[in-house]
Length: 110
Length: 118
Image 1 (cartoon, each protein chain N blue to C red):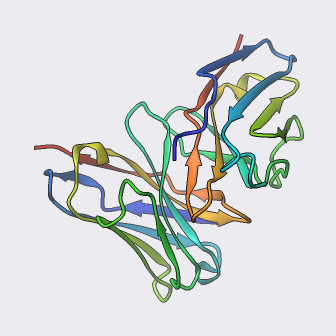
Image 2: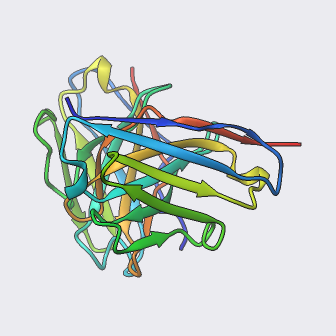
Image 3: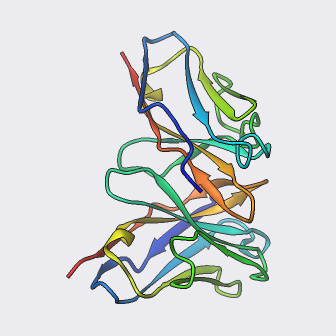
């Protein structure tokens, strides 16, 4: 399976909203509601922000939201804050007991 | 608090072996499936393997199938990854992460670095 496609970079000013896309195929993103999003600060382990397309674990601010349409999932960060600057990765179940990740998006808060 | 701590990383020669461990605490280890995920230096995340809570099922990425073996000892709250026939492209930080719902991962360890080089 190929990696999911994410834009290499995204940016926004504090207080603004930014959306990061994650494009797959009907065999992964489009075929299952098992998309997750992870935030990773430099030198740190990833942290789950969204699972099962739209669910937010406890402790994750509601500024983080997500959706899916067809083969593309999206993560939206509203009210950008300096601490949101990080790498973001999507993942999706790809069938046959396989999990695939996107290439990652570096989010810069201007 | 919920914690996963990896160990066992280091330098190995191509064709060599290493065994990673992941010690769990703060939750009932025997009721959770656990994943291994790796990240090559400066690169993205790559899923490696998964084992069900009771060890009854194990799944692998094609890139490691036949070379890596995931296992667990619930009496010791510990997960393992036996890595054989190592290749330079296996060089990465290896994370263990707890299963969250359907194919999500919460609670990640801090990672352990594996370097495969002659």
